[in-house]
Picture 1 (cartoon, rainbow, N blue to C red):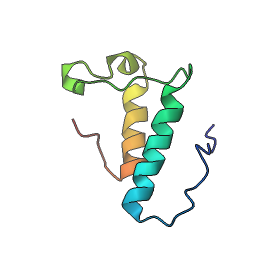
Picture 2 (picture 1 turned 90 degrees about the vertical axis):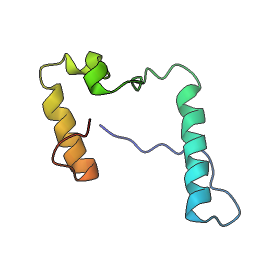
Picture 3 (picture 1 turned 90 degrees about the horizontal axis):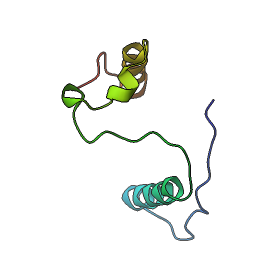
Picture 4 (picture 1 turned 30 degrees about the vertical axis):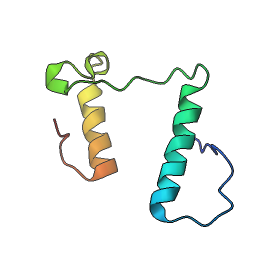
Length: 80
């Protein structure tokens, strides 16, 4: 289901954590915005204001979101 993507070659100079994070974020955004990737859009409004409405129409969406928040961030429930 998930695959590893190498966005670009590592920088030749040593980096601190912040520089590495900025470089990887920049590489990811360049990759994501280049070409037709058919990636889902991130809503600009809160769930309570209609954000993620397209996703929440699926019958098991709330369960999937709750599992994702719990697994990824260690939360019991999604924050709104």
